[in-house]
Image (tube, rainbow, N blue to C red; front, side, top):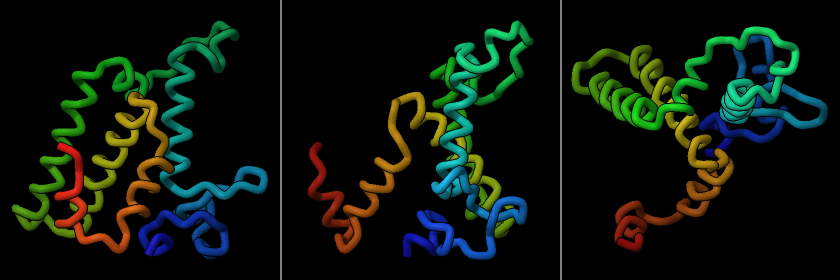
Length: 147
């Protein structure tokens, strides 16, 4: 399931879907990166650039970054997560089709990943929570949560 969902952690699991072919893996040294890992790294890079940790000493004008803007404005970030969740639901309610659904889901995942970064949560922590829920009824899992 994990590999089929696009969360594979090895190049072999993503054979034929490499970088440059519209795939979901980038290899840096010996470490393959999934799409979520690449997105997480890009978000971290934009945060560092906004703080002037990269390319800041050269005196060059900083690139405009939507990600950096979101990271600096919690109200805007939360509003975007809510907006994108609503738009994803609308794709079902209005029968807007698979392509629109995938696009809105991508927007929601991106904004969620920015929020995770703002909270200091690594995507691997989220994956671990999901893995720990395998084999447990969603109804039972929800009932067991602390209120």
